[in-house]
Image 1 (spheres, rainbow, N blue to C red):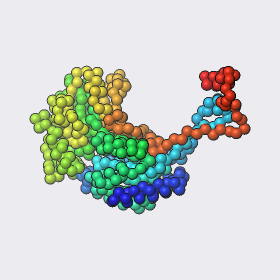
Image 2 (cartoon, helix red, strand yellow):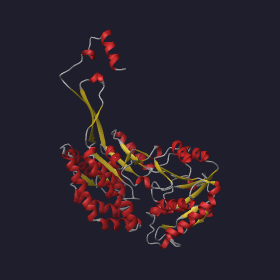
Image 3 (cartoon, rainbow, N blue to C red):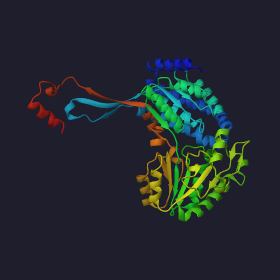
Image 4 (cartoon, helix red, strand yellow):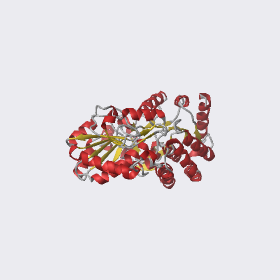
Amino acid sequence: MTELEIKQIAEKQRNYFYTGATLNPDFRIQALKRLKSCILHYENEISEAVKQDLGKSSFESYMCETGLTLSEINYQIKHLPAFCKEKTVPTPLSQFHSRSFQKPSPYGVTLIMSPWNYPFLLTMEPLADAIAAGNTAVVKPSAYSPHTSQIMKKIIEKCFDQQYVAVITGGRAENTSLLNQHFDYIFFTGSQTVGKEVMRCAAAHLTPVTLELGGKSPCLVDKTANLKLAARRIVFGKFLNCGQTCVAPDYLYCDHEIKDALIAQIKKEIKKQFGTSPLNNKNYGRIINEKHFHRICNLTDREKVVFGGKTDFKTLKIEPTVMDLVTFDDPVMEEEIFGPVLPVLTYESLSQAVNKINSMAHPLALYLFTGNKKAADFVLSRCSFGGGCINDTMIHLATSEMGFGGFGESGMGAYHGKAGFETFSHYKSIVDKKTWLDLPMRYQPYGRLKLKMVKSFLK
């Protein structure tokens, strides 16, 4: 699609937004219901598309993509009337008699740019939030997941006119053309490198942004943890979608006293969950493309692999792999892995671990396995990160009751549930001043008596 065509779509959406059609909460609810109905109708096609792009099983596809999307849509439908209401706030005595309130209002024309690793979920969830808040939306899915992009395009075009919600497929040229346009809000999920470019382009129009990025999310395990259960949950979180998850545990950081026992449990869990030949497991996915396959292989130090490590270039599969004796100077610790490779590092004390984590870029997630409440409180209060879990991995993002987002280098802003509605809304602060009373103290000429009155009101 040419830049002129993209510009025309953005202009059509702006004109449509200014008609006020999207402001009615009932209109938004009906739009969300159409989207939900269409997703249910094409559920099998969605699953097949995700499988073609990433090799995900139908179970994993529903659990991590379609099901979570439907849950978010249902949440917005249920709570949207309450979210749309004006909120009355206290009025200072100096503004007697007035009513002060905050009014949620949509930004207008929004741009949603999504990644390839959870191509359906990370497109449709923010779209549901944008619709709930009353915006129009231009959706740009990743070129790396073309089959899922096509089914999303099919669904959206059946549900909505292009002046309301439009899908633009393509690669870098389309991304550049989109970022040259003036949008009222940009929601981007992807890498830090591209996130910086999105923010740079948004600055030209002073467009607010939400950036959902990533980073090296640590998984801490102290010596009071239930190692068997910890291993089970770590293996699930790390190797789900072949490690291609922005909040996957990037590396294991454990107390030196329990390292060997923990690695032994992790080996058992990998065999239990993926079998003795993971490369032949039909429910185990693959790396998205050759570029990322080679990148992950190059990060893997074969001399430090203590489990797994086999690869199949034909299928782009990499076994769940564990590396031991890793240091923070190793190549695998210099960038986000985004693959099924788990480096294991150790610490002498929890304080040492916290200091090291804080010396690095702020991670999107942090996980801590411990049986000690004081240890949990210490880590949660001292470390800076987007979100996380105690004694589990990943599940903090699987709810509409809490906002999900990054912090510092791992992103800015949040979405899911009410946080998603708020992200795509501007809250106007308004004072409705009555006309039957007008206190004279703020008007000139000023004097001592008026100053005394002002001081009495503003104490």
